[in-house]
Image (cartoon, rainbow, N blue to C red; front, side, top):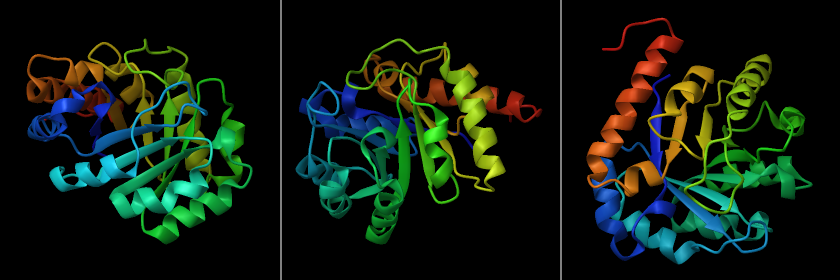
Length: 230
C-alpha cells in the first residue's frame, strides 16, 4: 500500500487557507486533514461545517475530517453534506460505535475510528471488521505542534496485527508530531496515512516540505516491504 499524506490545516494560516491547500497539493497531498474541536471533548475550538464547505470548493483532493467533538452522531450528516469524504470519530465518547460507523457509511463517507494515546486497542475489537480506517493519535488531541509520543509505534504495530486478524486491510492513519524525524518509525510500524501539520505549514516552502516528507515516507515504506525505493 502506498503511503498517503494528509496535511493538517490546524497548523495553516487561516487567513490564507486556499493558498496553503494549493501549495500542499502541489507537494503531493493525498488528502486535506481537517480537525474539528468543540471545546468539550478536547480543550480547543476550531471549525464547523461552513469552513469544510469552503475548503471543499478549493481542495482537489478528498477532505479527511476528524471529529473531536462530544456528540458526533448529531453533526455527522452536516459534515458529510459539507464535503467530508472521510469522517473519523473517537471511540472514547461513543457507547454505540457500531451504529455511528454504519450511519457515516450510509451518508456516503468513509467511516474511521480515532483512538487517544491512553486508550487501549481492546476498545476497537468489536468493530475491527467494519471500520474503514483507524486514526491513531500520537499526541494527546487538542493542540497542534506537540511532540510525538514514542509508544505510538508499538501501538501501530499491535493495531495492524489486530486488523489483520480480523481480515480487514483498513489503513492506519497517524496524527501527532509527524515530521522528518518521526516519519520513519511510524511508517515502519505500519502507518499508511500520515497527518502532518507544523512540519508542512510552518515551513517556508509548503510544497517542498510536503515533498520532503513524502520522500522520507517512501524510503521507510520501501524498507518496511523489503524493497528498494524507486
